Image (cartoon, rainbow, N blue to C red; front, side):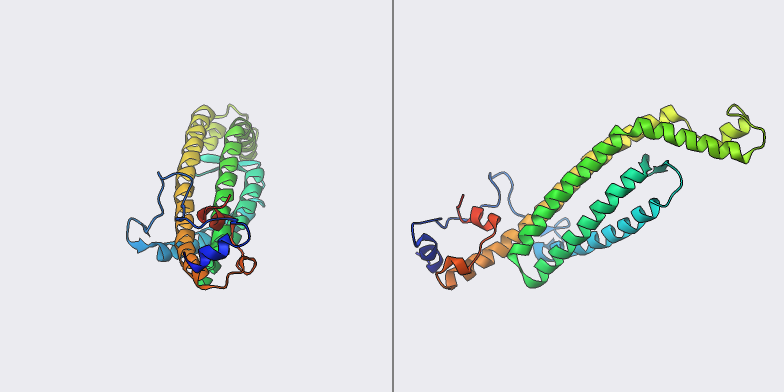
Length: 244
C-alpha cells in the first residue's frame, strides 16, 4: 500500500484510495485535448480563461453603457434588451471576470483547490445564463409593447402634425411587431440551447484540467506526511479518493 493510502486509512479508515473518478458515471471521460485537438488540456484551459476574461470585461463595459440608454427596450442581436436585462448581464459578467481570474490563478500556481472552485464557478455561471435567457423569453411580449411605444413617440416627434397612420411615421418605424416578436422567440430559444451546450463544454474543460491537476496531487499526497489534517482535500478530491 502507498504512504497516502496508509495515511488515509489511519484512525478508522475514513476514506480508501481508489482510482480517481471524473464524474458519477463512466459515460463522460476527461478531455486530454481541446480546441478540436489542437491544444493539450493545460494550454487550452489557460486560453479559455484568457478569452472569457477578455470577453467578460468587454461585455461588462457594454452592459454598463446600456444602462444609460433612454429607451425602455431596444433591439439587440435578434432579440430585445432592456435595463433589467442589462443589470443582470452586469452581474453575470462581473461574476465571470472573478471566475476566469480564479482559473488563471489555478493554472499559474497549479492549485487544485482553485481549479475546483473555477469548475463550480462555471456551473453557477451556466445556471445564471439559463436564468437570463428564460427571463428574456418571458418578457418579450412586454418588450414588444415598450419598444413599439418608444419607437412611435420618437418617429412622431420627427414629423410635425403627424399621426401614427402617417406614411412617414410608418416608414420611420420600419417595424413589424408580429414578425419581430416571433423572431425574438426563435432567437431566444436558440441562444438558450446554444449557451447551454457551449457552457457544458467549457465546464468539461475546467473539470478535465482539475482532474489532471488532481492526478499530480495524488502523487504528492503519496510522498507527503501522513497527517491528513495538513493536507486539506477539496470536495471533488474527496469524491475522487472514494469518500462520501
